[in-house]
Length: 241
Ligand code: OAD
Ligand code: ZN
Image 1 (tube, protein in one colour):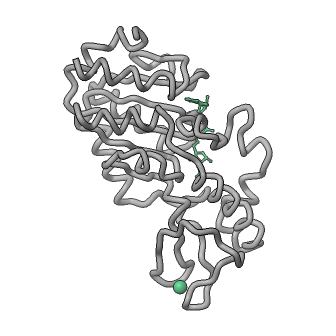
Image 2 (cartoon, helix red, strand yellow):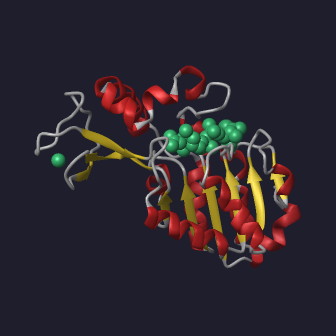
């Protein structure tokens, strides 16, 4: 129960908590990370699967990969890490800035989730305005829009900009929080990896939960070498005291 002790007062006194999350928070839900030991980018070439050029080159191949991930994600359940973040809303103002596309924070009950890299559950047309949440499995790959053009997952691919409204909100929340807790991200991808920098520049206490070191570990007020599902539930007893 002592994990967060060095920053316990900061947590208790905080009005606004901001979480920055990455693939690691969903690892204990059975969803692989990108750069870890069983990471997806160790097995697959991101440039062949996660760019718009790759998609137009071979939409079926890209869709087969995404559809497998979609089914794995739809069958997965939020773990105690996601659930703890959602429960903290009973005690504090909580905003979740996530790089994940899996929707598990929302399914755990978090209300203010900013999806920096989009959502794998949402599908949109490459040409018209069609966009919809689709939880059933897709039989025809690539799926086609009513307008006749190819549909794509509503995720941000390499080389694509983040949804600007979401990014603006995320920067604002990062710059105005009292405590930022960075969970399960290697902080290898820009611009999401700037969010802890904005928080620190604005005087927030910054905490990291990650079994591995990251480029920002030494800048953290507390860097915990722990898994999300183990560490995060401990936050509840601290802030509810
Ligand atoms: P990464 O795979 O780069 O990093 C996952 C991090 O989670 C690593 O630092 C691990 O040490 C840590 N980790 C592993 N298991 C954990 C656990 N149980 N609890 C806590 N931490 C754990 O994933 P991201 O940083 O999210 O983008 O990657 C960022 C972006 O790169 C992704 O959104 C994706 C990817 O390419 C796009 O597809 C655009
Ligand atoms: Zn269309």
